[in-house]
Picture 1 (cartoon, one colour):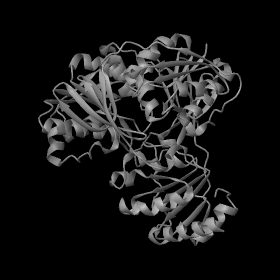
Picture 2 (cartoon, rainbow over the protein chains, first blue to last red; picture 1 turned 90 degrees about the horizontal axis):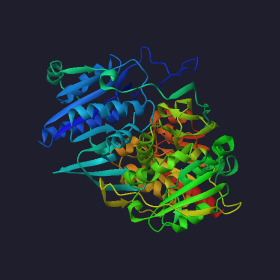
Picture 3 (cartoon, each protein chain N blue to C red; picture 1 turned 180 degrees about the vertical axis):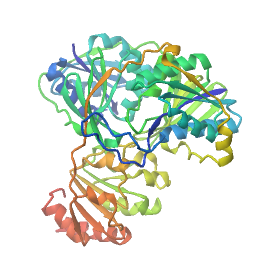
Picture 4 (cartoon, rainbow over the protein chains, first blue to last red; picture 1 turned 90 degrees about the vertical axis):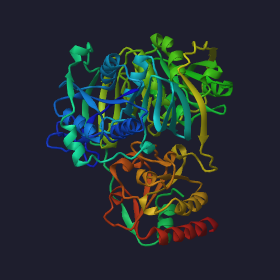
Length: 249
Length: 319
């Protein structure tokens, strides 16, 4: 089975973003970028499936400007076989990305597509579900466990009140949650090896997809700030404040 | 046009997040979106439909009582809602795992760029939503014919009964696609209140050192009638299950009182709790970022402070 894994380049999760003064967005110039953490989990899962012999090829896809290649290279160093880079300077929304991935899926014919459940920049949590709808495939979102048995993909899902298990008929789209695995660090030999793996460029036009943004971002602002409060010495003092000052007990 | 709400419900009652979503729908309705219709799909869901019909501001309830919808399959739900979309300018889901799973599937079928997790309605096509774990707020305008939206439950009041009861109409189930099959669920059994609707939440982080030590939080939770939560670090470390997680990639909570114990205050955790009314932090590191958002802080060893807090709360309760 071939597994397609979608990855996104985002501002590194450890960076505190700054809103631009003109309200046009957040500052991305000279800011450290990295692979979205949930995408890393998706790559790791696919590579493990290849190592276990469940998958025979792992193909990465990313859409975005030139540097998206670096993110693909990271995934190749983790163990993916090859990559596809959909090159565009346009701002991409989840629906457009889902359409691009659907077009790639039509060419590649994978048995499963893995994505992160959410990108930590726009926090949309949409692309995998949209992709499944466009392809007419089933979806297993927020996966904490994936097992493959013939044509059935069994997914344990993290839901608000616990865990839920669904059996999907292949091909299917699965999105990853936090506890699915712990992604590896690429070793130096694998980083060197990844330099020789192919990254094939494609354009939205070649895929026949209209990626014009649908949403107009009117402004981006700082959230209301919360003031630091006071430090107390004892638990008894705290309870007194909660009862008599804050009135929440 | 009108506003459609897809209601999450369980055991014959609407989920609290559905009530907040209905309030959001009324706001959109009042700003030009039209009247509010609620869809209740599930098995034996008549009581939830009747509850929706009695809410103030709900004009119509569509009920689809069928086993196919028992387990909230996104595939089945999208097939049920898609044919209705032409009659509605807005389709709203709560931003719970139920809505997050289901809404984008429908959005793609009706070719709409969903607006996720809105916390404010500016007008019928303009909404405010958090990005970057709530470190920025984006005001976005959608021109899509059908606006598919998920609603942040903590940002809206819960709808209450009132007004003229709405009519309840049957909605015929859609054809089954057989793409996915529900195997089973393991629901966390807890006598404590649910995390996202609790009045008080006490959460533990990496500083708790082990899952066993969460009993220290549970004892205080029981005194306060509180829910117990955790930071992503505590979940990552395997102390507690993921459904405890408060944060950007877990649950969003906004209780009256939030007590963060042994939590440093990573951006991703603050995203899930910084709208709480009162925040208390207990941490041995006085420079921990959690103190920058806490109304009250105690710098100290949580293994000393928690027993003292428990005693002080018990004393206050008796007094």
